[in-house]
Length: 351
Image (cartoon, rainbow, N blue to C red; front, side, top):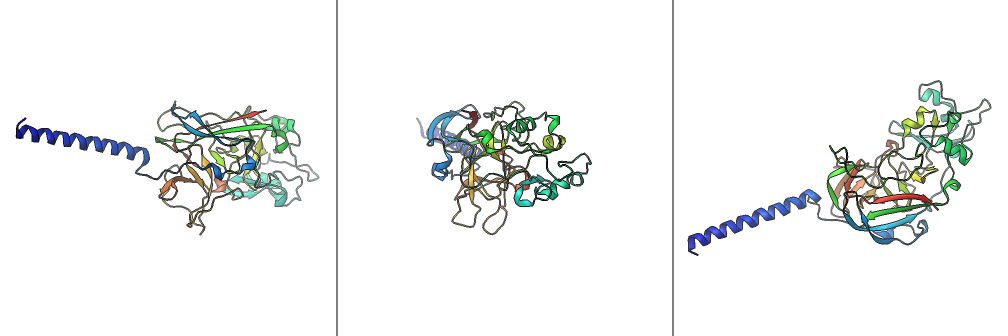
């Protein structure tokens, strides 16, 4: 090969290598947004007493159809770091300590007797009346009543009732979470129902088995949002419109949770009562993992400041925590707006 041809070949090879490098670099940037710090799930963060069996590693099919090594986490939806309830006050004279909280318009309201009495004014609808003439509040006081009210087509007998389901109704529940050990970005990001933007029939994750699945349970999402360190799941938005249109109220307790007879105790708000992993800097504390393996952190940091630079999913990146989410305000009825990564799965069954 003469010198001219050798130089041409060398130039061509160099250009080819540069294009190849750029393509690989572009692909990596697209998948990780130049975020090179990926933090794996830490099983030691979970409270051992909240587990039905030790956490194990298993191969599991993710939301995009690929298979990855996941942590299998088995719980019974019972928190060990705080008490459950109360939810519904029993009398109009009861104070805030006898009831839970309600989310409306981005705010949290104490569900005390005065709040129950004022519902017709609060919602500007005279049909609201959850109490008797003697001040006794109508409450679902049995499993049968709970099941009749906790469904999309609420039994008319339970219109104008405060709906609460007790822990004893779901004692035999078994929940299994499959969470990718190492988070894997899945561009474009999915919404919290695992739908990709502009893709009406995108691949979905496992749907919670909710039976009838109405109020006071979670939303109709294709996946739960994540898991707290106590083993309780963070649920999609509560279907408050369905709850309210039947003149029912399904309060959360002060920890942001309530019970669905088909899915057990779960959270719709982060109120600061669950186990948290404090950070060495002023960053907000960690409270769990999303179903794609990225960390879930509180809204406010140690200086009571909200995070800056969040993306549309409520996440951002730093070199200490990698990509992670910050949950929304407790009154917003939404933890995050979607998933950056490929999600694992979840099932709830009764033994």
